[in-house]
Image (cartoon, rainbow, N blue to C red; front, side, top):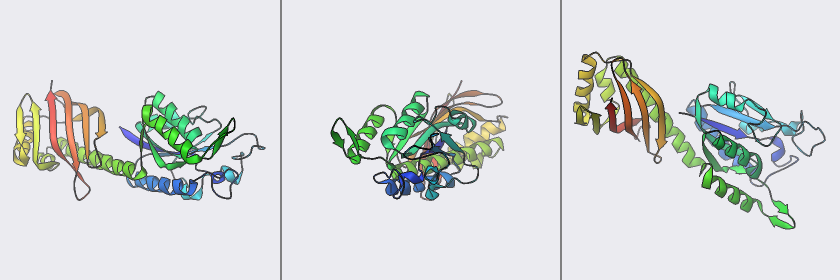
Length: 299
């Protein structure tokens, strides 16, 4: 359930002074920096993609040229892979799929350029490969285009592409909304890991600490437990009965809004297994996440 940031072709030639400056590239780059900062702070994977045309006589992104380098604002940090591509589709002829699989990535957030070319292509390809895609619309840029005498300004080109992607291939969101989702997911993952660590250490109080004070837990077929005391009592009995070594199987995090997310998953312990139908995690004022609803079943 890991989410990765894909930064597509944010290269010098697309900026003012480059060989192919785009409309709004500076603004898109600033939003991309904000996304990059959020992913780095959350220790989530970041993959940079840059384009090189092998023909050195091309109009821009010539192999070995300064214009083909990633812009300094988005310079890769140590350990962040850089995929060099020669096609519009970032997956074609590159190790991008392998890099995503190695990192356990299921969801991708996409930003970069150009909207109607490489951003469009990588989003459609990623969706076809089964990745859950989000596109930061204000972290992408494009250019004016013309076809058979019809001139289309960059803003309309951008809007048309984003509308199509949002219809069938991705969740198209603002950078701010996506950052809020990243921070929420990170908080939920950390809280979930704390809960599992506490349970496996035989610490029922630590388990209960990850619930809101008025949380409701439905533990089928055992019953319904309301409030921290009842929740702690349930886990105390389970631990006393010798249950341990809990693991989640193929967990999925679904963001409901900027403050709430749901985990669904299979689970197993040393002496039982089952299904988590719904863990509703809610962001707290201190930036942590706690369980408001916990609905699971032993099978």
